[in-house]
Image (tube, rainbow, N blue to C red):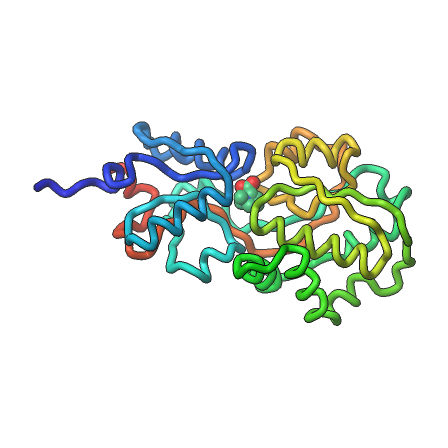
Length: 268
Ligand code: PBE
């Protein structure tokens, strides 16, 4: 019996997420640049992707997903990134905080806190894992804030309170952004007295929202690569407050038990 190729084993499907995600555009590009003509990128959501991964992993079946770091899945499963010799997915990047034009004048306290917000992939992973273990996002965020009082005080010290004022944070339901946005909401509320609404949207509307003033801020801008198109489309219509987290990665991810190492191995 002839050995099946990896492509045959996974029906030439890569399990993707929501179509607006930068990683979906990068993967479309990868299919072109690596000449993977018979392959299809399947649209879905972050939750559907991790459910498919969980199912395949339990059966030791092959699966190829669009993955990113920080993410709880790397703690729960033994996974590897496929090498990307053409560097389609870019290298390390940062997650930036981006605010609407005029926030500095309108809400100087929120602006100051958002400008100070900065944490590590390990911090974010703690919140993500707690949520994955069954905590509600707002509980996981509150717990992290309590356990990291020194860091949070550093962000918020000397900033005047803004009791009862309203703010809108837009985000996409990616596990990493559910974690960060809930933490920032908690700090704005508990330390500065704001009342924060979280608007869950797709990636396109998230960038549109912070650029047209429908949202006050996002902490979910993956730059310089993943959200490059959005950044360029709306340039000048938002204020980039710089990185809040350093050391992310995106790419194609497979269980370590699969016998492939590089995106180039998908061609055979
Ligand atoms: N992600 C997580 C997003 C940014 C955050 C990598 C799925 C994206 O691809 O746009």
